[in-house]
Image (cartoon, rainbow, N blue to C red):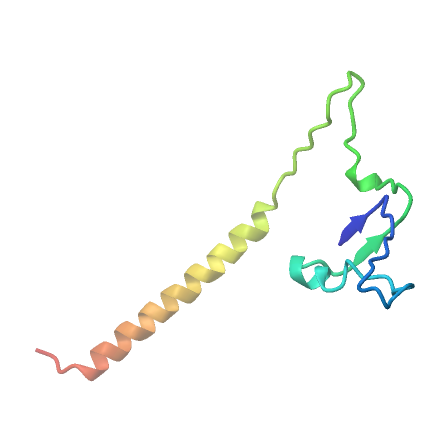
Length: 102
């Protein structure tokens, strides 16, 4: 999502015969171009709490440590290993069935 604040709408004169032209949509197509799902445009200043950096009592940014869940990862790796071993076993069995024994 793109958020634009402190936006001042402007009118553009497109020619001498258009004394009151329609406003030009400066944000038409921008969302698609930048991959945003939406654009919010405000004339006033907007405070976005998610952009605030939490500070510790000494005034330094708080650092968070996120521990990964290795148990789920371990299970996924083991499943992939068993699957790969099964493919190798099937491939070896089909090769020995096709080739004449020497």
